[in-house]
Every structure is written in structure tokens, then in C-alpha cells.
Length: 464
Image (cartoon, rainbow, N blue to C red):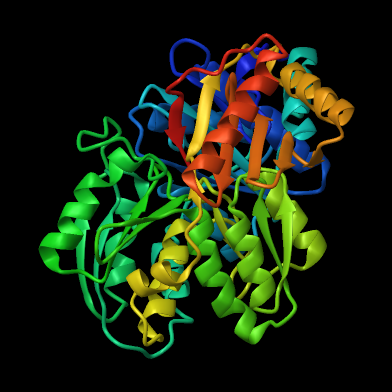
């Protein structure tokens, strides 16, 4: 009987992720392959697509995961080095029964992990926890699966640009941040009109230029400088595995996830009036108002790429997004988060408009808001703190939504407090009409936390 016990910290809500050599080892990758392969086989499936990102530990973990899959009787189709969305695409293109991507996403270089699809759906939550239980019990299938290699790069690049409409030629800078999008960026831009510059194209898991997380503005400084130097119309950046997007306009100003979603939503709603557009609870009220003004039905939902993908399918939503830069197009696309496809759709909107991206940004209402404020809170305490804050709000008769944490509405605007599903942190965000109102909202968050014995630091880490 094959028994293996995982470090419980690596089995997350949306994926499996840990520190290589400390909480995550090749033996874990092998056990993940075997347990996931067992789920596939017992569900009547046979084939799993397998890809890996540019992290230094990814080839070894991929090899071990393939061994585990095959030992459960699964036929493995190796896609090779790629961004996560290309692996998702391969599951559709090859009609595979599942997919596993070896990736540490936007985490530091010593992290790695696994994102999975069972059939065409995300594999998350209780399903991930079940792998741990199966592995501990030795509840796994036994077999001898095959191994083949298959490139989907040409098919993927052609599909990404297939729906581009005729428009004016743009000058664009792309920053792949030494991440896995470097594999596919040239094949995509070769099929696009305009003038394109690529920064940090070589895939390098040590990320020598800057960390590949476009939600942190400091990581966009090279992109801003290149956009100004080239006189470009816009710049686009990616996280390490290519499922999150960042963007700057021709003046080098950042457009955050909710601002970008407002621009895409207007375009999608021209052809799909009345459609539901979904955003997570961290998004600006401006986005929800803009969707409604454009004739759409705005929906606020929980943060989490797996959760939003499932909700999109339930609602028949053509577009959804998160502040973190995960963007999901089901309009002319598959419904999964692909930052390269989203980038091409942004170019398409700008190229077919009389306005520049900077003008589109300036046309949006400009409230005063904080970025996403993140501060440490023990894993066994973070959800309890939110529950305690919620109880206090109920007692005070406050107006709030509790779809994911608490989002509190006041005369000044709104503030949010939620527990991260992936880290031992609490997350807060505030948005107001003016600076004075923003100050009052921040004070309200601090007061609510203080009642639970939590002191929010004066300078919590910021991201989007």
C-alpha cells in the first residue's frame, strides 16, 4: 500500500503550494500525481495534460508528478515549459480528462506548487483536501500509464489572436518578467499588427530583473520607463505563470484590475447587453456602477480564481475579474484566466477605439482608495477575527455584505476586511470620495480590529 502524508500547509483553497525543500518535495509531487490520477481514472478518464513553469525546481517536480500519474494508470501528455493558461488550453485542445500545472505563480522563487483541472473544471477546495486524505490512507489506483510529448504552442498562439478586429496599429511594450509567458510571447506578437517590444523575455526562475507580480507597483517601474522611452500606447505585464495581468497607459500610469475590467466590460456589453459581469469584493464601486451604466448586471462575489470560474459558469457570465489581475473571458474564450489573451483583448479595445488607453482611464470616475492592505494574522486566528468584526457590525446595525469577509458601506464610501485563503494575513481596503473620508474609513477599520485585539500596522504591505 502506497501511503504518503503531506505537510498540511501546502493543501490550499485554490491550489497546492509550498516552499521547495521545506514543505514541498519531489515525493509530494509523486503523491499528488498518483492521487489526482486516481480521481481521473475512477471518474472514467484516462489522459492528463502536464505542464511546468520556469522555476528552477519545476522540472524535477514535473518528472515526479508524471511518475505518480502513470503509476495510477493515467496516460500523461507533457506540454513542456509553458504558462499556466497554455496548460488550460491544452486540456481543451487535446480533449484531456484533466490537467496539472507545476507552478509557484507569483510567489517568491523558492516556492512551487500545482494548479489542477478535472475535466474542464477547476479542481479546488474540498477536492484538494481529499487528495491528502487519499494519500494518507493509501487509497490509490495502480496501473501503468503511457507518456507522450505534445506542443500546443502554435495552436495556442493562433487561437489567442483569432478574434482580433481590424484597427489602428499600436506601439506596445510587454514585460514577461522572466516568467513563463516568455515561451509564447513571440509567437503571439508575431501574429499581431503594430510595433512590439518585449522586456525580460528569457525564462529564468531566479527572476533577476524584478519579481513577477504586476499587482505591486514597484515591479512595473521597468515597464513604465520603457513605455515612456518608446512613446508606446500602453504596456502590459504578467505574473510568473501568466494568469494575472498588469497594465500601464501611454503616460506610464497603472490601471488596476477593476479599472481594466470596466474597460473590457463596456466592450463586451456592446454585443451582450444585460449580461452579468462578476468582480471580487475588493473591486471599486466605480466598476459596479460602470457595468450598470453600460447596460450590464454587476455582481460582487468572493475572491478566488477557482470560485469565480465556477460562479461564471453558473451565471452564464461572459466576463469576470479580480483586483489581483486574474481576468476571465467566456466571451469568445474558454472562461479561464489567461493574461496574454486578456492583453490581446485590451489591445483590441484600444485599437478599435478613437480613444487612447490614457483617455479611457481618465474618463473613469477617480475615487480616493487604498491598495489592498495586507498584514500578518495567525492562520488559526484570521477567520475568527473577521467573524468577531462581523458580530460587532451586526450589533451596531451597520450596513455590510458578508459574501467574503465584510464589506461595509458608510456615507464616506466603503471598507473591506477579509481573511486571505492562501496566506496567514488579513486583507483590508477602503474607498471614499475624498481624502478626509478615506481617513475616517481607515480609522473605522482600525477600531473594528482593535475590538478583536488586533492592531493594524501603520504601513501594511500593499498590493492589488
